Image (cartoon, rainbow, N blue to C red; front, side, top):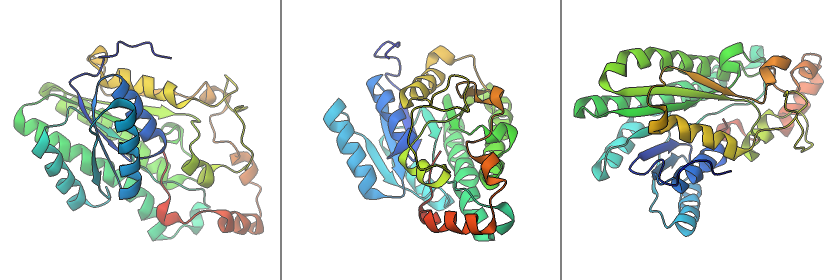
Amino acid sequence: MTGFANDLLRGKRVLITGGGTGLGKSMGERFLSLGAELVICGRRTEVLAQTAAEFRDTFGADVQTFRCDVRSSDDVEAMLDGIWQRAPLDVLVNNAAGNFIAQTHRLSARAIDSVLGICLHGTAYCTTGVGRRWIAQGRPGTVLSILTLSALQGGAFTVPSAMAKAGIDAMTKSLAVEWGPKGIRLVAVAPGSFPTEGAGARLNVSTEKSTADAGAALQRHGEHVELANLCAFLISDLASYITGETVVIDGGRRYLGGARAGVAEMLSWSDEDWERRRAQMPSRSNARST
């Protein structure tokens, strides 16, 4: 699945937050194959280094890495200063996220803040930090944010994430108007089911792995390259007249109800069922997915 000229993104310097694993890594791989210069950030230095080494071996690319907790505005500003010391960005991809399944009435303030901090505050810090620099320098730019279907229709048992992603959708529409005259575009993508190892451990009710997805009209999960191709198009000059839009790529899931797999089942879980689920889940302190 190529479809694009190999130089589609040549000359574009792209930062992907949460770019060391999962969908962020898949997007980075695709962008590099289309000629982009890549910067990735995340909280785990060793993961970033490993991903950068893989990209260097595959593409011969010098991928710049930054350890950054996007929940910290100081961390974000320090990272952006470091990036600009080498060269300005042309594209920001807000991909870093955190999410897990839980009964909302049992969430602690800390659990709520952990998701809002990464998804909403982190995205706002990165977007305004990059936008401030572009505007000061009179540079055009593009911000692409990765949302979820729950941003558009709500998400039972993942309420903090749905709230955060809905806020990012509003940010995308609002700044498209405010920053449009300055040559800055904002777009977003709302994916359906694109399995990743991290998300699977925290969001899937079933432990069985399958390529089938009965909740989507196309009856399968999405492939990472399909999402990466859409994102490559949206940050490219081919999409230069698209701004303020959230593009859904879900295999028709919305038209079959749109809920995450297992929600109907969870509605009937007992307290004992939820206790078993909590015992099986990885630590929330590292809960990161898109």
